[in-house]
Amino acid sequence: MGVPRLDKFFKGMRATDITTDRIRDYIEAGKTEGLTGSTIRRSLAVLRTMLNQARKEGKLRLADVPHFPMPKEGKARQGFVEPGVFESIRAALPENLRPLITFIYFTGCRKGAAKRITWPMVAKDCCEIMLPGEITKSGEPLLLPLTGPLEQVASVLRKMFRTDGPVFDATNLRKEWNTACHSLGLGKYENELYSGLTLHDLRRSAVRNLIRAGVSRGIAMQITGHKTEHVFERYNIVDTADISEALIKVGEYAAKKNRSGDTKLIQKRSGGAD
Image 1: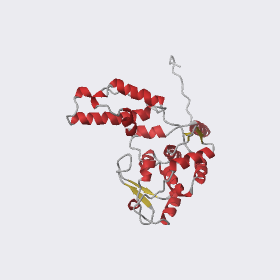
Image 2: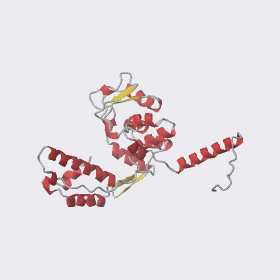
Image 3: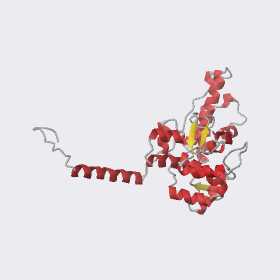
């Protein structure tokens, strides 16, 4: 949520010292660090909520709550992982991490939520997982059957000993992910900083895969936990292949209609417009 960064930047300031100019400085500092507009907006939304709550409780005056200029929301990331590429990444990862990333890739579950899944949420026969509203982004409980591509996850879980801890092992997840992607040419390290495919790209990929598989938008949004169409659409990225497929389909449709003779000649009326 950006709270650590807020603490670092505004450390030692009184609430009344946080002015619109200070907020602009915060935005510029974030841009210098390479943060996206969306990331900066989310952290500022947290700060604004805190100040408004303080005002409601009588700890601040209305005049003490500054105007919040917000940076433009950046374009949605374009990174996604095709099924064949995903299989390569999974094979390059340690075996203990494979159930977790498989679950994320096919359900679109957020990494943070997946890491918070505990054994009481898993059915005794490991055929389904019930995510409570406390860990889903939508705030609504979500039942996910471990069927189809998730059957392999269920198979692994059935062999595991149930404990009070998390179900999925996420030991060194980010480091191992970055290393695997680097080895496959899907990312790279420069001066010990990684850039390339990210774990969050698995969530984006799940959305696109569900839509391409013909799953209805409503069901897809239930699976991935997206509550609004706006956010879902930011993940449902259309690329050149999608456009090409659409044009092929419309061409096939036109050819089919032409072969069936289902055409009507439209006669121009005298004096009518072209």
